[in-house]
Image (cartoon, rainbow, N blue to C red; front, side, top):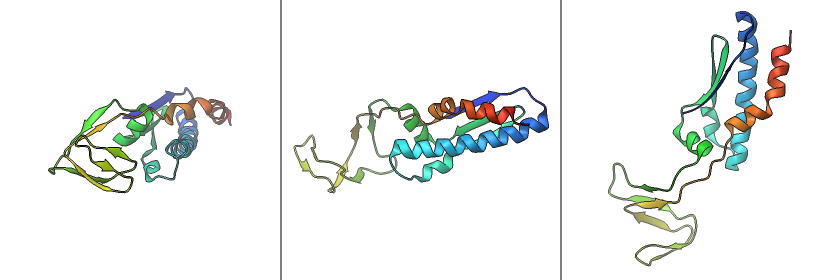
Length: 142
């Protein structure tokens, strides 16, 4: 789970209103950044959330895929969970181990796939650091 939180020291009523404003702002910006790094509109933006606990706002996602986008993945083997094989449509041209030529758009059925891993595409921490001046502005409002 990707999680980001910070504490502030102000009275509880003022803190709650300011933290709510900060939470809404950061979630919106992180959703926009997520769509930018993914390269398209995505329903995953709904999984970027915030909550307020005492004097802190917590921006988080409990969606495993968003954690993979944020942190990247190591190369790994993908195997079917409840089936005998994986079936998908090829996204690019390649040759299988058996020497079969696969063309983008072909339907492919395999027992396993060697995934090359993914590079991190952070959207949580960059937004937070870019937003520090605005967060400070929200905190200093009366």
